[in-house]
Length: 218
Image (tube, rainbow, N blue to C red; front, top):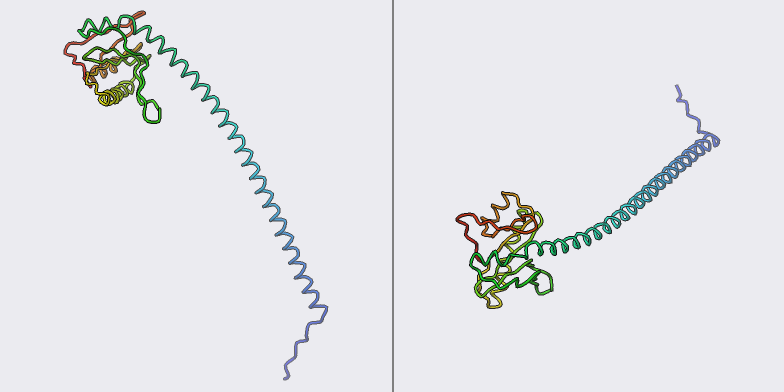
């Protein structure tokens, strides 16, 4: 029997389909555009928020930096004032104390002696120096003596030894640490490193030398 032929779609049908596709595409474009606008808005707001937070962070950093600068200046001033106080505590009688050990120092040879590098930076600084024809004794003064203070004084005297060698000064160098507060273990560490130890006693400083103590020479 003959095959029935499918009738071709009418113009109206095709046009309706094209119109529907076009409208769908238009709606899709609208959705994409709105989504992109929303995405851009979120990104912009995020960037603004990040910028705002960064600005606030920068303000906090600047504020903190100013506080640190102020505290540094204040601490520097306190350090200088303590140095002056310490010299008044340690200075009186210190020459006599060491002369009783046979040193024969004429007086305090220097306060705040600095060794500079080629760029003018401080490599080492001595609070108090006592000198005679045979010895130089460098005294480091601290409020509360810590382990690193002893380690730093060892390095300080090594630098001082090198400095004196370059100036053809062959005198022996010895060290001492004076402190208002001395933990027994820290005191023992100072003695083991060959330093004389001066401790606050009332309004002055006392120096006890244990039996068998041998001062180190640099």
